Structures are given as structure tokens and as C-alpha cells.
Length: 270
Image 1 (cartoon, rainbow, N blue to C red):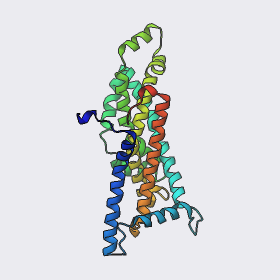
Image 2 (image 1 turned 120 degrees about the horizontal axis):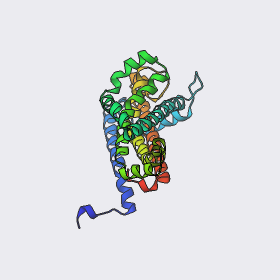
Image 3 (image 1 turned 45 degrees about the vertical axis):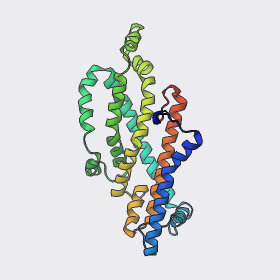
Image 4 (image 1 turned 30 degrees about the horizontal axis):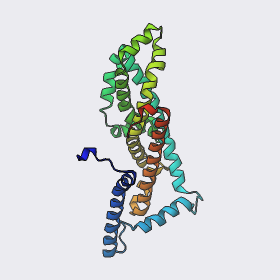
């Protein structure tokens, strides 16, 4: 039988899904044991037990001076910035994508501009954003918007252009206006792609958020990681990295579930 036709059973599929994580954990544990055996004071690869103890402390023990749990404060601050930036990006990309895909004048005016904008490295604009918007929340949200909106817009516009022309003609024959065509014909077909684009853009959004927090912030997951690096506190850094990964996975899972429930006909393996 050809390999292309071999489909693993559910237990085998679960094991295969867990296998890369098990391999990474095993490799890290072995590397940590080797380094700690050679130098018990080594901080580069703390033992998994040390990371677990640090995680428990970070999640449960408040700071002695402020009486606040920094990890939760950092989490809430970062998620607020992330949701703000991604939400604005999703709305802008939806509106602009519909306009470019449906309106020839908008397509002629904006498609080239969006294409060029998508080539600009967003992190190179970070100093400009800090000068224009200051070091507060606005510059961090704007960086996320600039970073992911052009790519989402181009993909959504392409999806609108792929709508069969017969549907547009039939809607016009029935007397539908441009706004009605956008809302009743294009929008239902674009929304599943929008959710997919948001899922694919989350990695970049996290990257821009952490970079902005590392440069100028006093709270946030990225801020805390770059704050403790001067002390070589790898147990804290790894705890934060793992926590960010878990948050990203949860958000992606929620979006996938939303897409599957709202648009079951568009369900994919992503």
C-alpha cells in the first residue's frame, strides 16, 4: 500500500501529535542534566523541576512590595494590546478588502498602495511610531495594525475577486445595490477567510507586540522577558515563553472552534 493512503487510527494520531513535544522535552532534559552535572550553578538550561517551581511561584505568589502577581498583570496588559491591534486589523482588512475586491475605482486606487505597504518591515517603523504616538499603548497597537493588516487585506481582496461573477450579476439583476452585494453576497464568503487570516497572523502579531514591549513598556509579557534577561533568569524567561505559547494555542483553538461552528462548510485541517 502506498504511504499516501495510510491514515493513522485515532490512538496512533494522538501519539504522533505528542511525539515532537516528547522529543523536545527529552532533548532539553538531557541537555540540562549534562550542563548541570558539569556545573551545578549553570543558568542556561535550568532543570524542568526548577522551571515548574518557578512557574508555580510566578502564577501564585505576589510581589513583596507591590502585593501584585506580575505574571497576571503582564498577561492582561499584553492581551489587551494584542486583541486591540488584531481587532482593528481585522476590521480594516475586511472593509478595505471588500472595497478592493468589489469596486474597480477602489482597486485601482488602493491595491498597489497595499502591496507596497506590505513590503515595509514593520519593526523598522517602531522608532517612528514611538516618536509620533509616544511610548504608551497607542504605538504598540499601531505596530500590530501596520504589521498584519496589509497581508490580511491582500488575501481578503483576492478572495472577493474569486467570487463567481455570476453571483454578482444575479444580485444586480435582482436589483441589489453595491452595499447589499457586499453584505449579502461577498461578506458571508469572506468571513471564514478572515478568521483563517487572523489565525495565521497571530504569530506575527505576538512578535510585534513583544518587540514593542521590550523597547518601551513597564508592564507586559515581552517587557518582563527582556527585564529579567540581564539576570540570566532562564527559568523565568522559559516560563513566560511557555505561557505565551499556551495563550497563543488557546486563542487559535477558540478561533478554529468559532470557524467550525459558524461556517461548517469551510472547515479545514488547519
